[in-house]
Length: 103
Image (cartoon, rainbow, N blue to C red; front, side):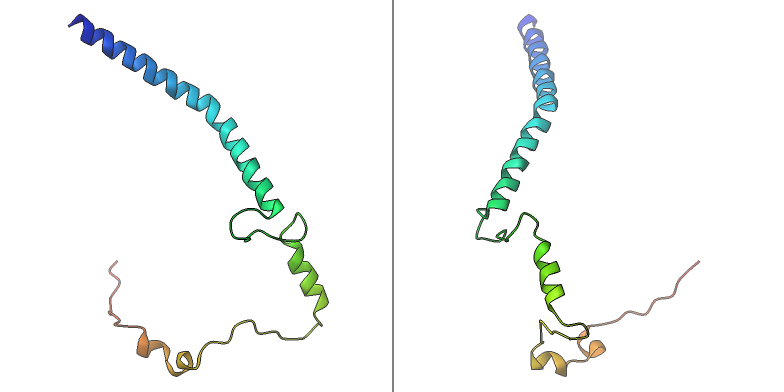
């Protein structure tokens, strides 16, 4: 019985000690980890080139392309396929259920 009580006391001391250490050390570790990820992203080494941009700010490319366009010019980036034009909203949307609001 004495050894069980000793085990429980030691277990709780270790548990709360580790919990306290995590509260102290995790913000530091997460800050360092995010700094490394941001550094890799700025260098263009973060997975498959998805973060490769010219300057340190990824939004600069939108400012440059917008100023290069002529004012009043329309640019279409996406044109849907022809089969999407044949469908009408309520014909392909599925089954609708009528309901009444009860107050």
